[in-house]
Image 1 (cartoon, rainbow, N blue to C red):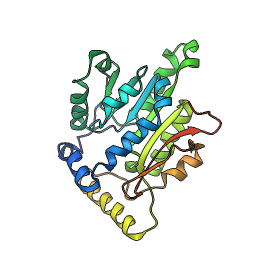
Image 2: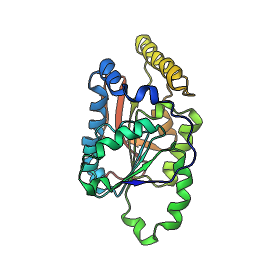
Image 3: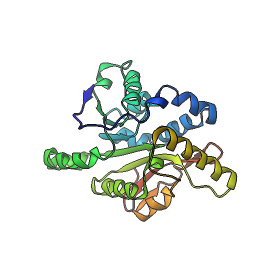
Image 4: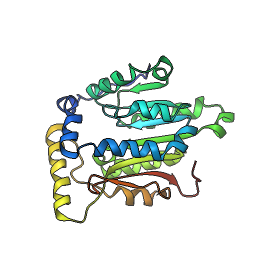
Length: 242
């Protein structure tokens, strides 16, 4: 496995949650959050099969990372996770895989902003003749909800400039019913207390995607957890489906 050099990281704000995160998610949602991961893998098999570079931001403990690597046999996976404790749990999953798959993973212990620094490296090191065959996919699963609005705009703009072909997205979505809204707000309070996230409420990410020219591929959308969670494959307007 490859490990990318990274700068100094803030203290691990998820160390309290890392050992119990999956059990807590299972207690509250059953297997619905895992199913949302699998929906993206199953629905995105066409894009993943052609993908040569896969970037997973905020991968956490690496739920279904084995299935993801299997679905994207040509791709290198850049796994970006700011929590060292979460990253170690993801690495333990890949340690059990064959050597070839282990070597396809680049582990990055950093925030997603590492990508903005890396963009300078990409433009200078990727041969021009390779760009035509380069298929870049971006995966964010239950990650966008911790970003502030300016951070979301910045990431979406980066994805456009980086020519991301397919964005595999899954997250909680804005609700109309007061009970569901209250439940989501309660989750934010819990995360603010335990991890000190800056975002205080759920943004309308689907609207933000629309503003930046991203749209869901037809029939790729799936709802989970009593419609609290939505997943879909997104492409830039004018791009064709893989």
